[in-house]
Length: 364
View (cartoon, rainbow, N blue to C red):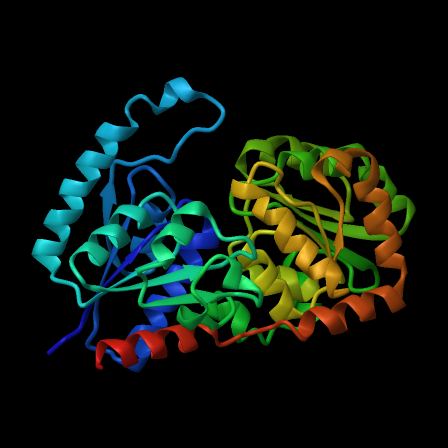
């Protein structure tokens, strides 16, 4: 009989792309497996999951709003409605297992699975686990984590260190530096800085680059600037006429951008870090300060402690980011040191490890 698995979660690329990678790995190992995604209506998973060829059902759910308590008035009703929709999804699909990857929709789905005694798996991508995952971890069948030291959040016997699943195009990247540079119309003779602000962009990083844009030309550097949609028009306008700057809202083929880059500016979301580890890139991290439990700072600090990255707090980025990335771009020894250390943390086959364990436990 075909096995049926629900994968729940989303909200950002950092949850969606690993979820899709896990789904693909499961179907490579067991092609007859049926997979259904459950996401939050209106979030990016509702677009990205169907693009990857999977069916998705949306829940009308949001998270707890910490900044405006008044906006939480409708939350109990949404949770109740989600519970009944989840109940119907389980009745129709009859899953043998549920995988939660984080995001609003994963909580009600995993909670219901645990109430019904259905196998439940959690993938915690960050170095600091969120409250929902910590709560669900107590009854989970297995908790897949990206790094060591997660016993403070989950029962030790349930933890399996797998790393974070990354996009296949990056895990198996064969693009040369010259091919990457050519893709962006830049020069192979100059050091190249890549700036990525996550799937939704990064306001502070964009403003810091904007303010210091002239410094790149003065220091004979070029920049690949992924700005995100909100800043895209301004970034393109600022880059206009500058042969050393490529600016765009989103880079679909990130393997070319990573191949082109000598050094990288990035937020410190779990997926960005996992991809930088596999690509062995020296990176300067600017953690997003409003991430739940400030987990991006914890992620970045974890790398700094291992001499695998540099960190600048978001509040200091406007003054310090551009000088720091220029200094790193000019310091070949520091680049090599960071590259060597970040490479040791790479786990390029996380998706296969997770898929194999899920299928093993389903099959008893």
